[in-house]
Amino acid sequence: MRSLLLVLGCLTCALAAFAAGGRRVEFSWPTPNPAWAEGRPPRDFLQHAGSGDPESGGFGGVRSGGSQFHEGIDIRCLNRDRRGEPTDPVTAAMDGVVRHINAVAGDSNYGRYVVLEHPDETPCVYTLYAHLARIAPGLREGARVTRGQVLGLMGHSSSGKIPRDRAHLHFEIGLMATRDFQSWYNSRKFGSPNEQGLWNGMNLIGIDPLDFLGKWRERKLDTFAEYFAQLEPAVKLRIATTRVPDFVLRYPALLTQPLPAGVTGWEVTFDWTGLPFRWTPLTGTEAIGLAPNRPRILDVNAGLVRRERSRTLVVMRRGTWVVAHDLNTMLEQLFGLH
Image (cartoon, rainbow, N blue to C red; front, side, top):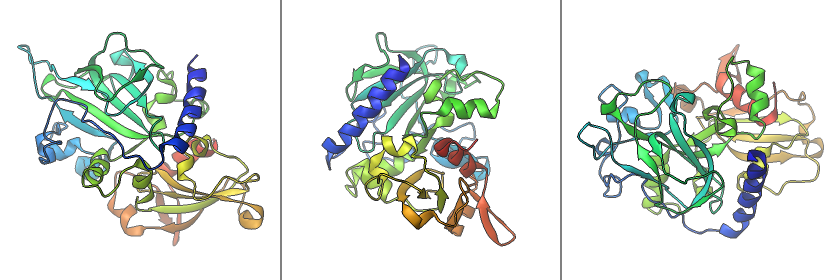
């Protein structure tokens, strides 16, 4: 049933990409905290991760002196009951479809969480709402939800331990890496089952929500397609393969040109997190000289990749840039390079 829902969801996203055009994103903050909407600084709405510094609740290399990556943002609690438990409802940031519900707190570091996909947006991004105390009654996978609809109650659930006084909503916006995630997961031999299917956090590629929302609020952009187009390149590479990753079929807005009948390889540009945001198909002789399934680095933004220490996309060896751990993982998932 989940596979059928996914196929239908991908088809819906692809069709919506043509219909959405340049329609401006309609977004609502997913908690009652008014600070972001009022233009107040992040310290007024981000929950710190134990350091006392609100920036540690932001996106990116914000923890452990810049070496630990955080995929989303942590929105702090506004209201509590007499026991100190949060009472803030968590609501859908945009109209969408429920793709995944994990109701068992101990099955994920996310705790209880809900994932929505947004077919009206181009590309068809997901949003994720984690560490919930409970899921809204009646919420079901495959159901359509409207912006502002209650998804659950803010909490501090997790497979680990989050103190009550640091209860928060972990919120993400991003893209899914691959529909073939289970094959990649099996190849890694983690020693534990994949309880979350395609919506396992290891298969999700987040963007910086506050970066997008800041530019959206200032009307520097209207759509997610515009946001992805302006991301700063960190690494560009080519790879020879006849494989067409399901990533580009699900997110055709990231293609620089229409998909041709015969693909011989790809030129892919990644941002510093490893998100592949620009795809150019290679045809005919364009892949000649490339070893099959062996990426060749074309360009590296050296200052950027050295500054962002929480992700390791490439490293310099004997004067040559080579693929490193985080980029290798992404390539494995995108192209099935196990």
